[in-house]
Length: 270
Image 1 (cartoon, one colour):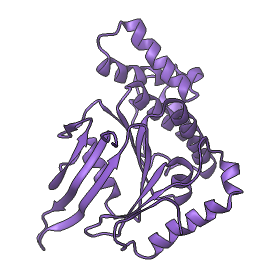
Image 2 (image 1 turned 120 degrees about the vertical axis):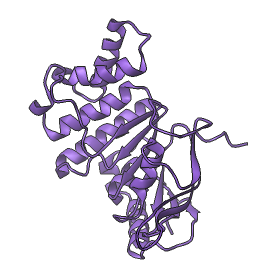
Image 3 (image 1 turned 90 degrees about the vertical axis):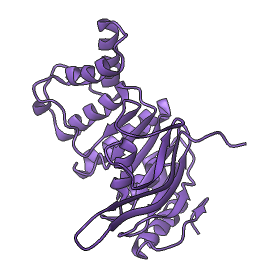
């Protein structure tokens, strides 16, 4: 018997009223994510993947269906979800450590001040920012600020991490460094992750499964690929694996084919 999923999306849909009539953004999204699983949601711009993520964040209400996290229906934002956006949105007048501790204070008020400070320091150490605790966001590079955003989400010890294209605004080298850092952190903690990305290579490096959205309007899940590479993963080793290019070609073929296939799940690409 399969264990109950940590996150379950059931017939999820979102429609907005317009002068021309209802605009269906996403429809009939059904997905189950197990505890400890890393899932990437991928598709063209405008396919509704960020809409789905915003519903799971509790920032957007579904028009139809529901999102269940830990056997409770999501009906608004909550500290059981750690969120990382494209921009980390740190408070500029606080130090990096103070930004992290502010989140810890909200979710762990019963801890002593010393214990909350220790939690903040531990989160900063996890992302390699232990030596930057007393600096302000303006003094950090874009990559370091995003590390701080990830640390803030981890410090809350959420049930699930929700990542909305967190590396898309970074240069290529920094992006690869943070992908590797995220992979290392996930290997250590096995926190459940749902991540939106438009980068095929990023999804193949990070994910256990890749959920492919059809093109909008009225987008839905077109295919789910189980990534066929064992963990732990090393970027250089994947580049030497012929299976990597077959998986990559399968993803690109779906996206270039207008993403209009019927839903199915595959263990590995054809």
